[in-house]
Image (cartoon, rainbow, N blue to C red):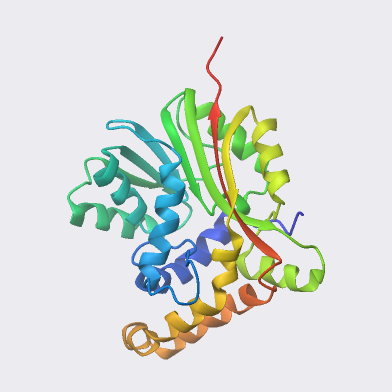
Length: 277
């Protein structure tokens, strides 16, 4: 399902506005959470880090490998990959705030020699063919105005045998489309494929799909738990950023919660650029 196109500059401005509070709430990771059930006592940063681990584990990273973090956010994922797997990470984002925050976070962690960040558009990457062993895209492909073009770019900058893993929302039910439209508009999404459509896009770009899952019930399906957990930190966040900023952040995401929990899925997929024969 295709939505209104969003220019990279508009997406960058959106994240410049939302990322500071999101960074505070989720400890440098702006993607979704994963709770097993309503009794799960994991904090919000812990629940978000579960997604980090679930997606990055599918890459099978090895020490010294070079990874492109496409849509790197404020840098916590890149720091984790350098320290946990010994990888080198180049992160790109269209958000000036995220470049600065990620650079600061890597320096604080002492990994700025292995994790570097720059402003860049993944639809037109400024890297030679075969530059990377792996590509990670955590909730960024959904913003692509031309998803096939972006996937072809990932395919181009990967070496033969290189891996791509991503996570993104999926359309699980087209009933009540007004709710879906409200959700997509609140995030500025360009596309909202079904699981089968996500896999087809990968194959059309020349990738061999190796693993995939749809874990929406434990992700978007736990939206009410997110609201309860986030509200526990409301006063703390308001004291740091101000009531006006927090109200603006909340208003911008209000439409995100419009769909029923069974309408929005969450896809994690891993694929490989086939080796030359």
